[in-house]
Length: 83
Image (cartoon, rainbow, N blue to C red; front, side, top):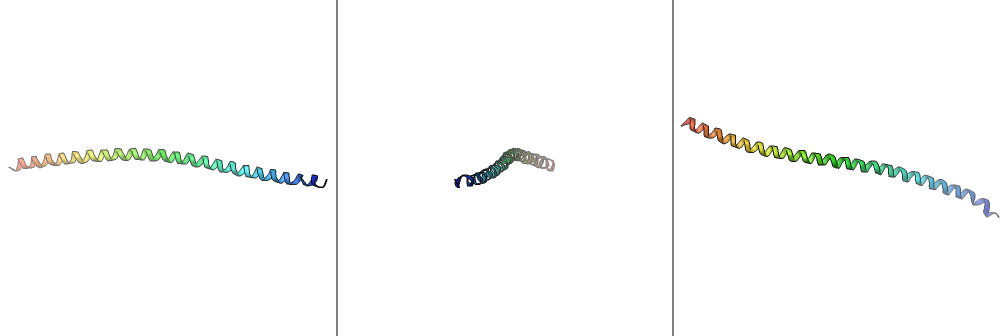
């Protein structure tokens, strides 16, 4: 019967360890949820930035084309005035 009373404390210790481990797991899960949310938010911001960069590139190309046309227009106008 000496094994009976000794079985109590190891079970308490096992339960405490299990509770501590579960608490750690819960903490890690919470941290990972926050990290996933941050990654999703970052992905959205990067996507928006990429869209803005594309729009800026398109605007720059249009500006370059318009500037070249304007330059040619005034070059020809200058040639006609100078003649």
